[in-house]
Image (cartoon, rainbow, N blue to C red; front, side, top):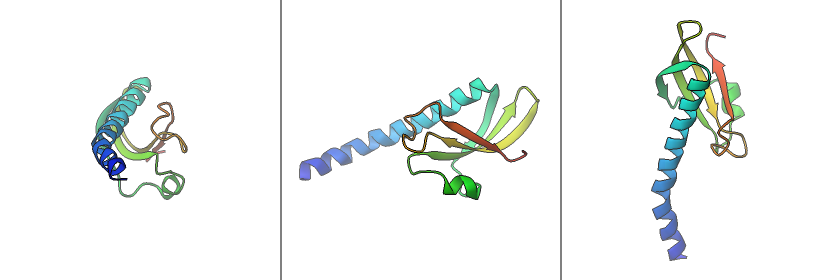
Length: 101
């Protein structure tokens, strides 16, 4: 039992590092695919209620501020990274809700 606890405690920093690296790489890939330049990202405290209620613990919600190269304007929005069941393991599952839409 103690061995399992020690293994879990040693693995936690690696999981946290992987989690944040995965979020960063997913954001970068999403921005590149949509011709956006990321200006600011933060873990938001007040996402839209509909997104908050339909997000699992495995997913991540981020508030982003980006420069849209196609329209030449700055946009703000909320991103949900990962799928409901697989979380950040599903790199293609990214949903955005723009604040100006």
